[in-house]
Image (cartoon, rainbow, N blue to C red; front, side, top):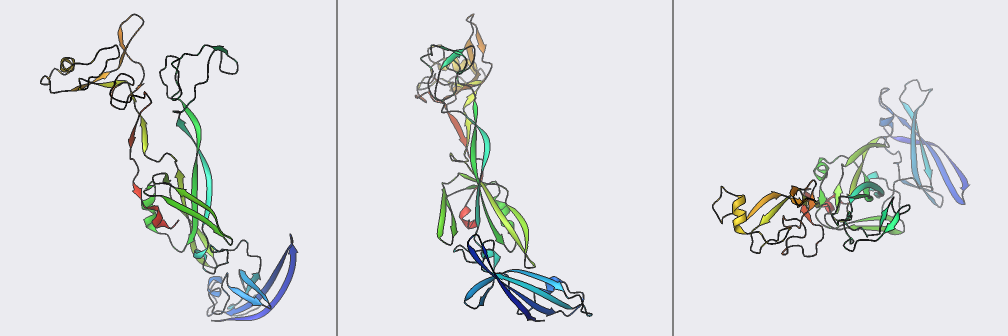
Length: 357
């Protein structure tokens, strides 16, 4: 079953200043069986492959289309004509990293798409502005600002921080390419983070046009997808690797806040909110079932003094100092008085460079 060239014509057009040359060839194929389909016709020996180059005079054109059609007046039903279109305008054709059209679609250059994902993030770097009454900044009356309000967490006028959030955006970088089959190993990368720095490049006929470098632990692989693509009767898959970028890494940072606190007898001694230091005797009293002197700390509900001077439990979570105590009462930890975070590794790490992105 071989293809035979039975016709050829050429045309020339000018579009947007570009001289487009086009050649159309008609190849005839006689199949073995009447039941054979167009897919069989496209497999005929000698038929130009999609993307193959052809020389026409001094011009080199590329096969950009192949359209098979059964010959209507053939009584055997086995005769097909395949119209092959050639053009020098290959801007929509698969290309390699140097911008040249390729016969093998899997050798085409990858595409890199960047989108932005909106999310909410806690505010830890606010700049104090002012205090007003009767309304916010634009409508309220300015008051004298308390001297103890400083930059960092959003606070109320007592200086107590609150959990305030703001809108932010993260990049989602998607690398896509054609492959001849689906690799089930890709499933192992979903919801993992990069264990090392990863560099992604975009190229065209002029060379590298963009380079993106992402430090370790800043990319999280979202679900890898496949989309079937038929090219010249062959099945390929467009594989997309979407990665969400988090500049401060995907190590989970949990705000160190609680309604409870650890109290320590020391050494060194931990200062009480009302003054003085916790003693071993006080810790022993909080742990009556333990042998005196063997327990060095206890977990208590945080308490404060109300207007009547009574001790009451706090009604909401308060910042801790990274050592289990409320912020500002432990002179041995976090002397800067800034908000603390407890960091946790919650995603598996993998080597993304093995994906050849």
